[in-house]
Image (cartoon, rainbow, N blue to C red; front, side):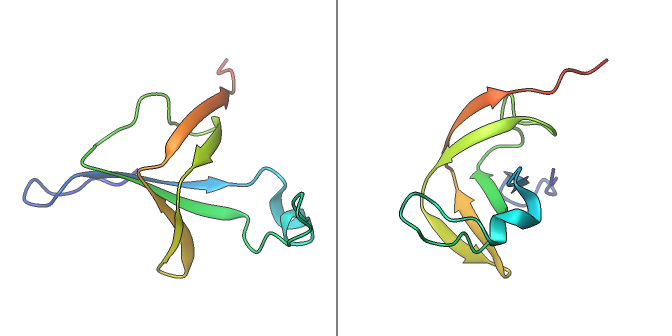
Length: 88
């Protein structure tokens, strides 16, 4: 999670990791296209947190992908929480 100083515009940022890990580099999607990344930076502008988004949550994201600092990034995506890890 990223905190901004009060003088800056707020945003919430997270890095989402494909649960396939390094194998994702060799995996293909339904169209037969290789997945070039197993990480995605997700950024919600104007927010300091997003309810339900925390470490261990499995998500489905929908939005346009761009490059940001060499990493694919998605701004203000629609999201669906698929499951959460139970904390003991």
